[in-house]
Image (cartoon, rainbow, N blue to C red; front, side, top):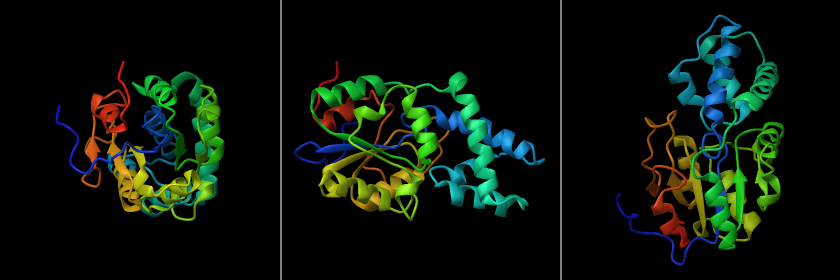
Amino acid sequence: MNPPPPGNPSPAPHAVVFDMDGLMFNTEEVYTRVGTELLGRRGCEFTVELKNAIMGMRPQPTFETMIRRLALDDTWEQLAAESNEIFLGLLDERLAPMPGLPELLDALEVAEIPKAIATSSDRELATAVLSRFDLPPRFRFILTSEDVTHGKPDPEIYCKAADRFGLGAGETLVLEDSENGCRAAAAAGAFTVAVPGEHSREHDFSAATLVIDSLGDARLYEVLGIALD
């Protein structure tokens, strides 16, 4: 494996901000099933092209993109409500943490590095996902789509996360799995680590400072200055 690129924060980052969907959990896989069902009910196909276009977006622009591209008659609010209903019905059967997540959370806590979540999901869905693994108490705070005016790739959510920590964005490390998310973090000035998943391997991660294989990658632990057991 290649070493981390030049420009690593020194000392190690003072806080870590996690994206949620596709980064902490396999929710992008779940959302593929949701999109397929949602659009299938309307005689439409949830294509890879459409999925890539909306990945990392807040709910309103996500469903407005669907409406525009597929000439749907629904409002974005109607699609969002139906999508949430389908999503929540799949969680108990389909939801799983991504490889390396439990170990990384434990290591950050041992090192006393604070952490937060900045997700494009709404608070209802974020709470439903995180609570299934009793995770909310382990994070300093959780930012959702309701907490920002502009969604990823706009840097607002990561600027706001740094402010909540009382840090400059350059003192934070952001973990993302999508192109839109990496663009947002990089634009905020954060040390941006891309963790591509099966759903995002073809994305452009040129905005990221470092691209790694998983949350258990030794290069991430090296950048953070923490031990990999």
